[in-house]
Image (cartoon, rainbow, N blue to C red; front, side, top):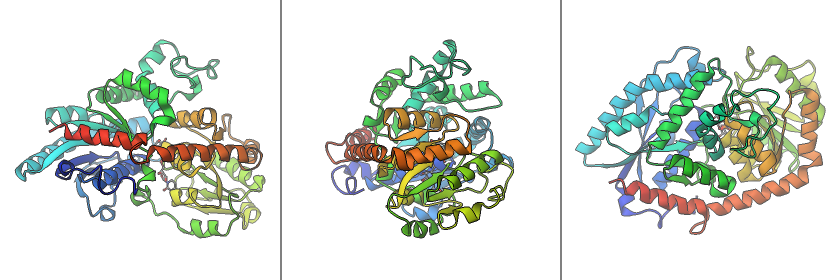
Length: 464
Ligand code: UDX
């Protein structure tokens, strides 16, 4: 944080400029957008957050921002977001928010014109594709924040090509074949999402890519060294300025925008454990598991004999309240060795000296947070960008392993042994090495993210 605060990057022009930010109301998207807002604010920009009342950020945590809500009425199943058909949900959000957003943005722009305040640009989540047309109509530049990694966005932009070449829909027997246009992704790593309506998914992705091509630029919560050749390809493909200025969590923690209460007893439990001995287990905010998978995970954890801290979110197990599905005798077996919470202060957990490994669903925020602490991962991706992240963790950066086959207790136990015992030293060394390189990206003057940030600010200031 100290790299960015204060002097050099803050200019007088920035301090007279207001930016309007519009996050997608899901945890994994809200966190990076609010982290970005804090980064921009620390550099002198004024910030207005336009948000839905559904999953709205806690404005009292950010007294330095202005908040402006737009109405959104969701069906009961939609408002549970975890476990819904994500494609249908995101489409529905884009449709339902369009008119309220148009009215709000028009109102805000007129207000700031009257008060003589300069509005630099609109920054929206990439998924809000509808907002490009509205930004064009209201003559304001739109920059996109893509909250996931570069390769996934590149793959989305190749979807029509992948369909033409027969890689989508993914099918046996080619699942293990490498996709020539996207090495080292295999067919099974293509970031698709299980949907009742695959055509709608492709329409959503095409709309998102099309709107990105018409935007004034894209910000990635990533840094140049993680996906260098993919970044070059994406620049060529989209032909808009791209700014890799992350990882944001090195600059501002995500905890402030947590929608759930983080159980701090996890930290006092970790305080009592041996250094690097604990496996942290969490599958993020959206993933759901079947009752059978839950039992296999629990049994594998118990059989591994290793200490673990496990986040079991309410709603994680389909058709179950919270822990009712645990196998008989589980609590006795893990007594003193296992600890379960509903939601944890994840970044603090990953930075705790007792944590030695992370079993993750490979969401991009979790992946970055783990990289930033030098913690090796056991990846269990379910869908979308998680497939890509897991491939990079295990195959490209070699800082983890991936469970690729159907989940069962033996595979869980074997995976934990590899991560926490057999390959621990080697993977931790590699993870620490990557952490140091990523740290360097944020160094003042010669760090790539630092330089890209300066370019981003100059780009925004060139709009008016
Ligand atoms: C979703 C998608 O699943 C993910 O693939 C995509 O990259 C972003 O959107 P989510 O599943 O929530 O996100 O995963 P992830 O991206 O890892 O974000 C989870 C966030 O919640 C992280 O910032 C993490 O620190 C936080 N978290 C998680 C907590 O604060 N406490 C927890 O107990 C678990």
